[in-house]
Image 1 (cartoon, rainbow, N blue to C red):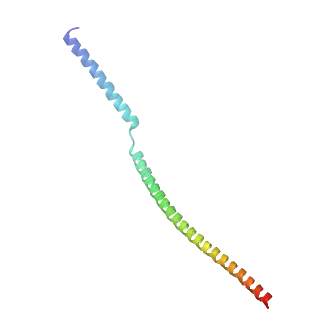
Image 2 (spheres, rainbow, N blue to C red):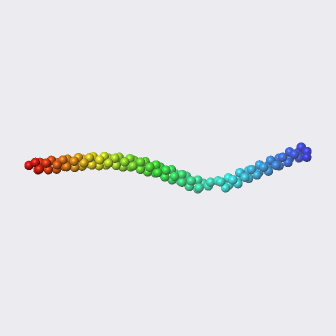
Length: 109
C-alpha cells in the first residue's frame, strides 16, 4: 500500500467515523428532545411544586406556632391546677383544725 492509498483509506475511515458520530448525535437528540408543549407542562409542574412547597412550609410554621400556644396553655393550666390543689389542701387542713377546735370547745363546756 503506497502513501496515496493510505491517505485515501484513512480519509474514508475518518469520514465514516464522523458520519456515524453525527448520526448517533442526531438519533439521541431525536429521542431526547423535549417538545414545546411538554416544556410548558414541565414549567407548570415546577410552578405547582413550588406552590406546594410554600404551602407545606406555611402549614409547618402554623403547626409550630399552634404547638407552642398549646404548650403554653397547658403549662398555665397545670400551674392553675397546682395552685387550686394547694388551696384545697390548705382549706381541708384548716377545716380539720376548725373541727378539732370546735370539738375541744364543746367538750370543755
